[in-house]
Image 1 (cartoon, rainbow, N blue to C red):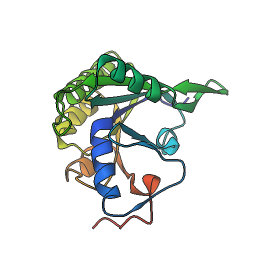
Image 2 (tube, rainbow, N blue to C red):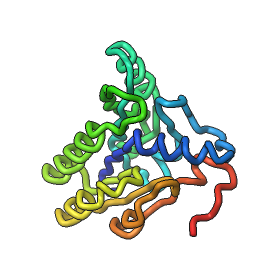
Image 3 (cartoon, one colour):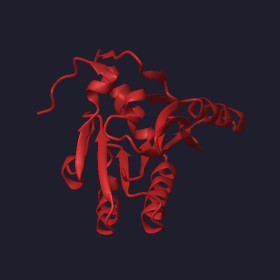
Length: 189
């Protein structure tokens, strides 16, 4: 039996790093779903390492009215991925956690706080055996260490742009996501 896996995506970090790399002139891969200033997604994120994904949680913050926040949540929730239940493959939707922020250029703490709370809660309540964190933010290093101390496996994936140097070495395995989103990305040093 495959371990149950929950994917936790810091969408705010992923989008910022994606847009920084895009600004260098890199070409986006086929299948990438990109809404400028809102979110980025690639279908391979759900299958890059895991066949037993039970849930994908996408955390982000956005400057908008309540209706604008709802529309972004709806757009993210329309993203589907295949997951395995027993012997069957079923479709599931990405679960959006969209928080309101005041200024476009500011980084929201709501994303980091809520993602941290959820990943720790899941570890303590045995909500998963394996966590897959998608973020290049070094603020998650202590969280990853705590989750691993509880006996859970933690896989980490991130883009190379702005990647904290500790993240590739702190978890059970690290995945560079550059080639998922970009054609011919430069090789990290």
